[in-house]
Length: 137
Image (cartoon, rainbow, N blue to C red; front, top):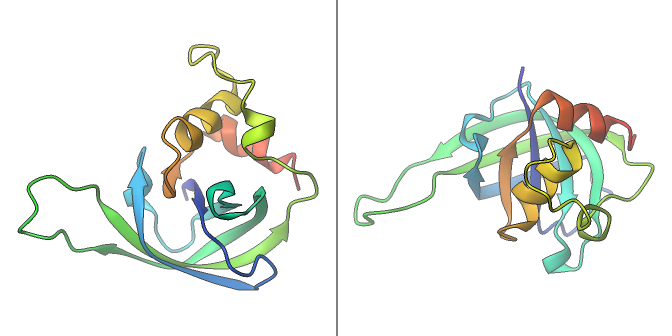
């Protein structure tokens, strides 16, 4: 199973299940599938505070590409079941100092994938980044 992270607007961070439609996928995010682990970040652009939960993908489906558009980012729709709540904060403020893109730190990977281009998205994660995120639970 692969590991992913999603940063998007979340209206109810206390929910047991989450459904996200047509999320932009980057850095391998389009390969997300049922059974994969996902770290959920409530987007600061929408009033959220970053990492709040870890879950398991219950269902995932690619959104069909629109033939009238020449260039487009692949999108996916996913349903996720919450498995754990984050015990410490991790968001833009905590990751901002990690901006040396060549330092090979998991925090830098997260900063790069989520905040270099601050749009909401689903991204694939390295094992090192997933291990780091597990320390927040």
